[in-house]
Amino acid sequence: MNIFLEFFVVLLKVLMAFMVAALRWFVRPKEKSVVGQVCLITGAGSGLGRLFALEFARRRALLVLLDINTQSNEETADMVRQIYRELEAAEAEKTPGDGVEEVPLCRLQVYTYTCDVGKREDVYATAERIQKEIGDVDVLVNNAGVVSGYPLLECPDELIERTMMVNCHAHFWTTKAFLPKMLEMNHGHIVTVSSSLGLFSTAGVEDYCASKYGAVGFHESLSHELKAAEKDGVSMTLVCPYLLDTGMFKGCRIRKEIEPFLPPLKADYCVKQAMSAILTNQPMVCTPRLMYIVTLMKSVLPFDAVVCMYRFLGADKCMYPFIAERKQAMNNNETKNGI
Image (cartoon, rainbow, N blue to C red; front, side, top):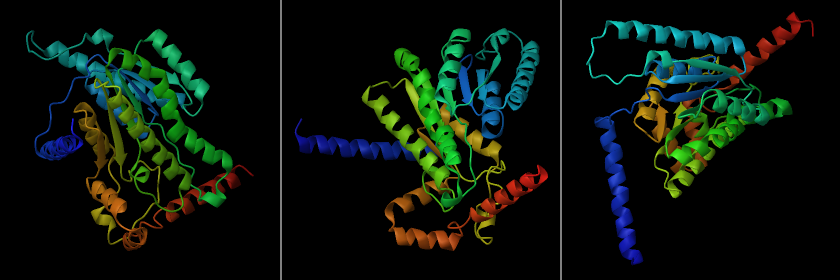
């Protein structure tokens, strides 16, 4: 094809993509079913991971929960089992022929595995057990994350490595373990739970920002690889929430006059938005939507202009109170333990 004609066709496709994206804001696509599908969630013992597990359970998926904390992971599993019992009770009250897509409730199960996703060997060994004991994974939610809470020059090297391993490298290990079967079947969904700090950064949490940027880069590159391989049956969704009220960044503060307009997000709201994106095969979701604008401005404005905006919003040093609280808590813990 003539290159000028091809360029014209590309422009039309780009405009069409804009129109479809705009239409999605007003007309939500139909959500796909995950009934009976195997959904694996890392970091399922608390926070977003636990909420993702509960949402997938309500949609009658089979849950595989991974967490380094066995007790909290089992607590999440108990919550999932309670949802299954409620579904069973609701099922008993239904009359035949309601036309609702079902899966035999005896098949609705939740499995728990204690796994340190920051350790490659642990991930591969756990994945092998899962494939033998349960079968293929249909939905992989890479959610596990940690934060050190130190600025760069005060952060121990082992904590920097730990942050990178859990927040970024773990995505490589889990995906390498479960993607091959998805490619073989041309069916599956990979969810990358990153952060707004994977799109634009702030001071004092260099290791966390780097790890989340790495997760975003991994996700985008893999998305292009799947498109190049024409594996359209394997979907990917990138989740980038703003500061959450889970306590992970307790103490983080932007300018007090701005904070009422941009408060920490409720975790359940973030997960519901993410679930909507996952079930409609949306490539990316930022919450709140203001984050799309911030990301665009960061991409087009000169760096000095971005710095001015950060200072106006109080975002340049927003992590300093969090770091101070973290240090104080650690000092108190050391004193308590007689260190």
